[in-house]
Length: 483
Image (cartoon, rainbow, N blue to C red):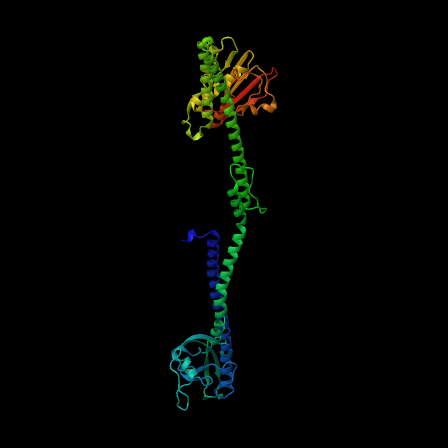
């Protein structure tokens, strides 16, 4: 369900949820921190009140209801652990004696320096002196767990206190009420309950708006791609100025469109060239047959059949070349071990028989030159190179094979005209002929070198036209990984 939502909505909801969790944790920590700080301040004030009560009530022999800044309940404990009195305004509660132990004798650091913090479990509320029901404040403090801060004071012989002449150490415990800390913490409840969801909502809305703005270039790219068709491949998607993933996406998309446009243009040119190449022999064959049928009595039928068969063979060879160029690499047979030197030796022997009057074929071949590849395709590669050399050579074609550094190299040299530097790459394009004035029937289809380079590339090798030597001529250099 969540995965079906738009990415900007999902991201905004996730950001809002994370903000809600973090802000809730922060609000909880802030409330607890405020409560702890306020309660620590309360304990400090209770400690001051304990010392004030110990001083005024015991030493100065004043009234039990000592006026202090904080009128909290307190108890006075004798050195034997007996609670002498308790009080603090009108508040009266029972405090168990075991919860308020007396100060040790002598107190560490002296009586005036001793203090202690204990946990007190209050009992029932004590009625006032008139026997009436306990005050409401006393009832509120009954049966609670509070913190008591104790202070000790030592009286000497003859010192009079509120409790009469009672020398020894008296311990005063003041019950620290958490009301102030709780009130301070509760004052944050309203702002936090309203602020935390508001902050989470604000984060979610901001994330949604930011992601929507960030995805505008993606929408622009999508819109432009939706309008591009096969007749509008020159259009390009907009590239945002920010250097980020979206800019790289736009740049990659434009590069893909460049390759697509180039591929489409090559395909159109290839189809046009193929149609032109097929039309020439078809037109010649059609014309020859029409003339022969128009004047059958004057036609040399054996010669017409022979010429028609030659044209048909040319069409068949051209069709095979076209099919090879359109066959995907994935459909090629699995590679095997092939002997490049043996294949070159076999083809040169065959060409010597096919061309008894020239050119002259010479070889410089090792015993074997193993390479890994498709033997039939490598055979076709070498045949195309040698046929091309035989067509352009004046007197000699030389084939050389060697192996060095994990690479097998094959040179095919003919002593014909040299290829100009600007045409050394163009000769590998489909249907390229540098001697346009020659008779097409005497030349090749214009696909031999293109097929040869395609086979070399499929075998992780290279095929290039090398620079001519001092005596001129043309050399093609094939490099293949040695098996």
